[in-house]
Length: 219
Image (cartoon, rainbow, N blue to C red):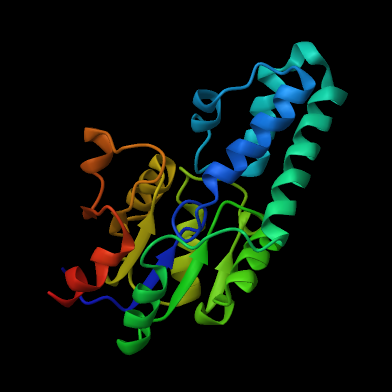
């Protein structure tokens, strides 16, 4: 493996155990409003931007009318943010250990997430790790969401590193596909969905958790 001069982290499902929180909030509001929601439906949109998710909800639930779909979306986000603000969102296993390792190696890193900047900053601040990242690239900074590589290309430009000397950590299929399209090596830490053979072929390695990464990078 090439020398690593910069690292790009996804956030949801990779740094924080948030994907289940998003699903539980959406399911709770959907049940209350009578929407035919399911975990399978939620999983279809893992790793994509909020804008794309909302567009799909309007398409899928169009029979309920635009206003009702907007209400479902808004109430789901409000419920999620209540959990975020409570400080009850746990870091994924191995996050702090990996950040400590990168500090020791003096390797800069950023967060590149399809989430919106306020949510990213809320979670990073809440966990006390915002200052451990050199910067953030969010949904507001790109015009095309993952699996388009735009967000990772912007992250690469921010770091000022070469693609072959940069490493991405991702948990979602869309994220892995975006990393490959950007020409940047990617390590996958699967969250809610196990990797397919096609996805495995796009990754440098697949690990169960971030705790396994420092030993791998030391090789």
